[in-house]
Length: 159
Image (tube, rainbow, N blue to C red; front, side, top):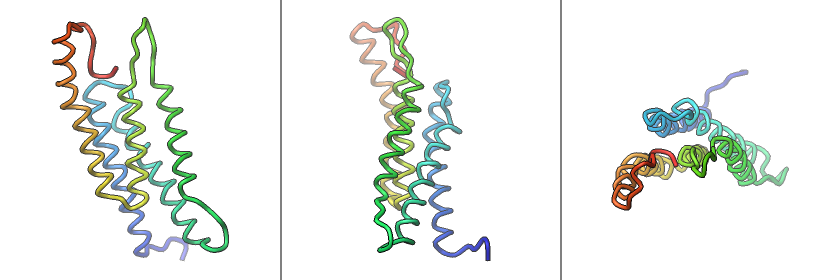
């Protein structure tokens, strides 16, 4: 049959769905913060990273003993590719940098997708929660520190 749904395929569907969901969570905070990269961007990055990871795992399994293939090479290519996308988000104007937090969040979103792709669900979920904590709770702490030390005019949301 052309499109067969076996237990392995169901697991892959779960992995892709989980990666997209965790990416959505990360992107939701960026959307609320008014950033250009939001839910769709983060979900697609996490989903894409997961997809490439799952494909590398499946190909490695299918060709075990026939071809020497290292799935970590795919992972390193994902990290590099997301780095280029993130670099495009960073703006430097009048001695102020913007977009670093969003770029770092996109990089983490890719890592979450890779983690799900390798079946490391609890690590991916914990990383998502930790990143959301950093995006939100740490923002308040950072804002208070900046006020305390006289940096009132700096927007702490996305430097």
